[in-house]
Image 1 (spheres, rainbow, N blue to C red):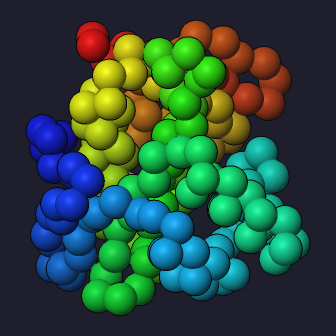
Image 2: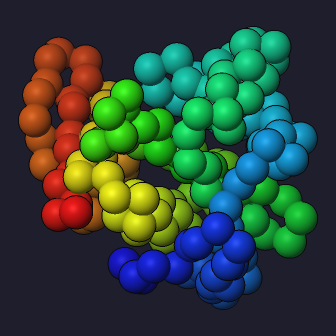
Amino acid sequence: MRKGIVVECRRINLIDRSGGKYEIRMCQTHDLAPLMDMYAVFSPRPASQGLPPEDHEVCTEWTKGLLAIGENIAAWKGERLIGHAALIPDLQGQSAEFVIFVHQDFRNLGIGTELAGATLERAKTLGFRSVWLTVSVTNFVAIRLYLKLDFQYCDMDDCERTMIIQLGC
């Protein structure tokens, strides 16, 4: 995982496993249209726990909410947004929920790993002590990624697992 690669105005240029160039940078309210372009064709939909929402209007409101209350980071291939991660802080600002979505045409290229790593580094920069997420018990690819990033299981039921990472801030 790269250290401190995404700050407010900085971008990082990367190369995926296929040799394709992409960049990771902060995502803000003016990026709503490219976000909605990605989510309009996202598959499977919903991917996990009803997200991203299938209905266009509901998805738009959900995305606007993430942009309004969260820290958002995106992966871009040229002008096309191909991945989106967000941190949704708790009310005390001590921890944040983590969500991540990578467009189906760009999975298994290392982009999700870099995007997740950049988001966790951003969480450290913001002073979060921990980041948590929920994941479907059948989403083996995501679980493998989260374990690689040092998330630990903290709760589970028949359908979902909750995982957490302590950031040491």
